[in-house]
Structure formats: structure tokens, C-alpha cells
Length: 415
Image (cartoon, rainbow, N blue to C red):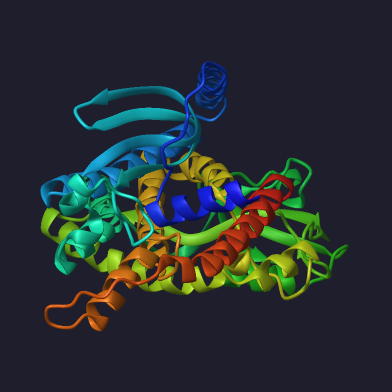
């Protein structure tokens, strides 16, 4: 237990993995796991190409996040010893100069190892001048925020590329079907298809996501209602019997996801301004989303199927978002998937700057605190040992949210 704690403390302090012994068996196991991951990605490419595109985009985003840390650390004179994609056992690694580059078996993230991240990170005295903790405040802040800044750059490039070439989603004033639930849902049974336009539900006119939801919720499960929709420009009417909602008790269920968004062409200059504006709007929404994501009560409400559980408060994971990207791809193609990927990059950038360890924001908060506490000629160094218990709680909370979100993603898919 003591060895585990010291390893955990060292990895929290270092912001990534620490040096570990590499045995032949660990290498074989790592390679076997890596082959399994490659096989799963190949299966995903065959099963759902749009989800595969989204997952590859996420992996590239993770890689570029670490490139941000790596390049700024090297630029400011810090010593980097590792650059790995993935976690867990090594699949492959190669040392070039003083840096070990490699791939680990589990594609759950990546890390760059910079020496001397804080007071308990042991550093060879000869390398102390190149340690993170020995650098000036501006340099430390640049390096630790570079990953999140890279996500904003990625989002801007994606938004701009989509807007300038394919347009931007705008309100259209009509409710278009973007996704359908399982084949046995009332909507599917009525012949409603993705791309159709909903006109009215039970005699109530609908024009957007909220009006569709309100119209369905004004009825009860078992009610027989008429649904008017347009399929390929032809208006049709179907009588359907609403089912019980599969996840929320007491609600009626049609099994359709619709909104009032459509694509509008933009010029290049307008695309630049709109990309910046959308990043700002997404940052604001992401700050609220982080608070929602870290609230364990939302997980409890969804697990117990509380009437207070809503889609906006539901915890999810990369599994759920990736599955949802398949729905987006089938509805809007590549530009829809890239727009979703841009929004996810903004959210990850904001989430990563939450001011608690083990997030980058935790290291940034420490750097700011040390700068405030330092006096002229006397640098203050925070004691990471005092922060590890709180970091342990944060890791525990993240693990709980991950397991809850994964369970909901598998049993109640978003897409």
C-alpha cells in the first residue's frame, strides 16, 4: 500500500507516469493489448466510419495537446524525458537524445514528462536549472496552459475549415429529424426517417427541439396521437401510440431527436469572426458544463431514473460522445462530425484547466499561488504533499463519473 501511495503521489506530482522497470513480460503484454486496440479500431472503421473519423480526430487532438506542452517546455529550456501516447504498459518506445518517445497500450490519453514539476519531484542536481520548478512564473504558466491553448487552436481551425467550405448550422424555423431510436420505437414504426421535417405532434405545431419535447411530454404513454411530417417534400400523417420512456419514469416516448438547425453558407471573413464567436460561446457553456459534469448528484439521478434527470445533466464518456458522433455523421456528414469535434476540443480545454490536481489547471493554480506568496529575492514553493489527499478525492470522483457515464453510455446510448 505504501508503494502504491508513493507511486500515485509521484505521478500526480509529475503530471504523468514516472520511470518504471520494463520487463519482457510487460512488453509482451503491452504489445498484445496494443494489437487488440488496433483490431478494435479496424472493426470500428468497418462498423461505423463516422465514429471512426471522430475517434481518430480525438486521438490527434490528444497528441497535439501534448505537442503543446512538449514544444513550449523545450522552447523555454526545460528538460523533457518522455512523450507517450496512451497509458498502461509500453507497446513501443524509442529514445532519441534525452527523450523517450513511445506508445502505450490503452488509448485513454497521453502525457509528456517534464522534470521537477514541484518540490517532491526528485531531480538530478545537474539538471535542476532545467526543472519546471526552477523556471520563471511566465514560463511555467505558458508550458502548463499550452495543452488547453492547443485545443482552442484546434477548435478554431476546425470551425473555420467547416464554415468556410460547408457553411454553419443556423436556425431554420423548422424541426428536422436528426436521429431515431431503436427500430421498435413509435417514430420508426410510423416510417419517420432521418432528414424528415416534423410539422405537428398530436395537433401541436412544432418548430424546434424544445417544442418537439414539450409536445411529446404533453401526452402520456399509451396515448394514440397523429404525427404530421414531410418526407422528401411530401406531407404525411401517421397515427402512433406513444411508448413509455426507456430511461425517465412517467414520460411519454416517441423515439425521435429533432432540432431546427440547418447549414448556411458563410464567406471567409465572416467564417473567421463566427469561429472566434463560437469558441467564446462554447467556452461559456463549457464552464457551466464542467460544474454539471463534476456534480455526483447528476449521476445518482440518472442511475435511479429520477424525474429530475435530463439530457443536459447526464454524465457521459468518450464512448457516448463517439457513439453520438455516428448519428451526427449520418445526419450532417463530415462537416457535422468536425463541428462536434471542435466543440469537444473547447470543452476539454476548459475542463483541463479546472484548478485542481491532477488537471493542468491544478499545476497552473500552484504556479499562481507560488507567485503570489513569493517575495523579492525569496521564492516560495508549495508543498505538494498537502495537496495529494485532495487530488486523491478528485481522482476518485472522476473514476465514479467515468464508471457511471460508461454504464449509461452502454445501456442508454445517446445516439
